[in-house]
Image (cartoon, rainbow, N blue to C red; front, side):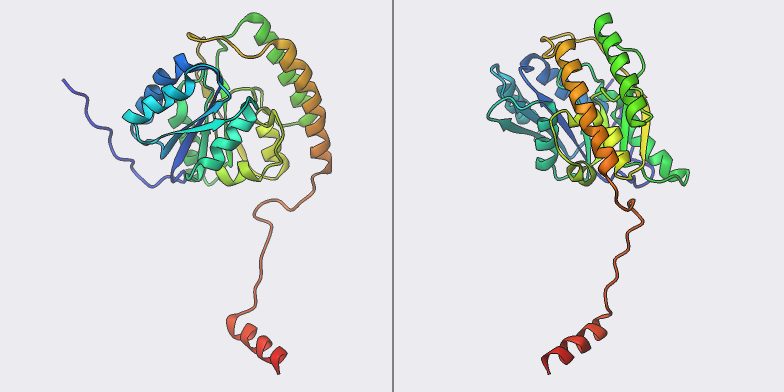
Length: 275
């Protein structure tokens, strides 16, 4: 018996439309299954676009994205002419998107696309409860499906970062996030930006929320990082973001007013200047 079509949403959502952005480097085996999971997991509220950013892959990643685009016209391929990293992929995808909200998702299949509605529900719940609209909802992996060494390294890095930056987020490394596109593109860009989004969003005065999400073991392909790579580069970036925090001073969003003269008054001023 065929499944019933998804029921319409009960009320307009503050997340008017969203795009899913997936940076990928040599993830040809994961592209097809992940795209099908994205559309299955968001059937009740589908994305406007699913943007795969091929970050200089040497395998068939781009070809697999184009193959999926034949089945799903919402799928978009963005290509880098070299390998520039995950943060560059997130930014390129956000720049290519037309939706006002962005969902970021790792290309290795460890994030569960079925959790995307939970991130959107967090925004809807905040509005329904009269809380400020979150500019970012960060996923918190409930049970890491990584090696012990990676989990221990991540726990140490998260603890150090949280103490220094005070971002109150125990898992900034989770690739599953929902963020306003204008906020993301308005943040200062640097490599590894994606790991510091909770801190940077709060530094610039935007509200943030968190939601528990699933985490899955990698089933296909191989990891592109080592713990040493993450640790050494992450420590360097951490002190850079700490410097940004100390040097960022600006009015919080919502505390900036813009005043303009009434049209009639403006016309009188223009006339007086020309006489």
